Image 1 (spheres, rainbow, N blue to C red):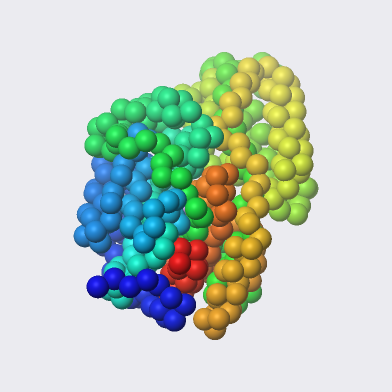
Image 2: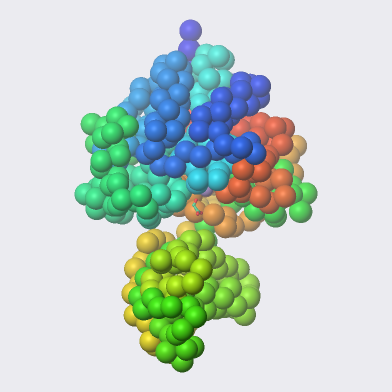
Length: 416
Ligand code: GLV
Ligand code: MN
Ligand code: MN
């Protein structure tokens, strides 16, 4: 017999062991040496991971809907109809990912549902647990693709036509793995969105806090540069006659690093991908393909970093006599979460006797997209050594469970 949730019934606790078991089981899908995971979006490994999570959703008696961009939303009925309180994240990973990035938020959401089912507690509003397609953006750009389409900020057709780093399109791969769903994109509407995630940075651990009340997400700018020069013999071509695409590319890479150091503050810059052609020891490169990831918590500073980087790249290319083309792969302004929700994360953590601090997110998250359509916030737990997008990503089990308990209480507050 289901009962209406009351404040006293908010003493429901999540089952930590069950949460940890699910994290381990999902982490075994696409596992790679060193304890990490490779489940790039819409690959076979992603499909196996999706199938497992959907199976768990059905076992929890959730109503599972798959939309046209492959987002999966599993809804638990409320005493009243209406927009659900949603939680979730993503289950795709980078090629050298860990077990927690994204997966924690989805599996903690399922654990909240399991705990409420066990306790026989019904909420007034429905609850939904979602995982969004291609949050990582490692295979298809931009990142946060599924949630971006969900909130109506990017046309579905454009996302479906996106070609990945291996040449396949999102539409082809969704159809191939059986996740081109029939549900309307952007449904249901969302009352509020809360996402639990590992911090992926060093702050909570260094400062000695268990819970992060995330104030917002920094802005992201991804640019792809294509540089065309002329290949020639490495031994016979005098330096003054070279049009070396590789040289221009590496100059830009070094400048990106220098730029971030000179700007200071929260500016970061990363060249995560650089491919030279023909990529041979004795041939001057005729082509370079590279990416630059710039991020800052301040929109004005991020724009300044972009201006300086682009100006430098053009000057470096001109000096070397190579052609430079640039394409934006992703561009998102910084997002601030709703202050009342950030304050509730803090208060709930304190009520549970957990240490809590406010901080911005350095990584991108689906919550920053959901924030466009509803009040949204995030809960962080520490990442040991601040390591993420690495097989060694790790969060202490007790911290995973603590974060899930904060999530449970905030979801109940919003849904009661
Ligand atoms: C995506 O998750 C990113 O922050 O790179
Ligand atoms: Mn993530
Ligand atoms: Mn990630």
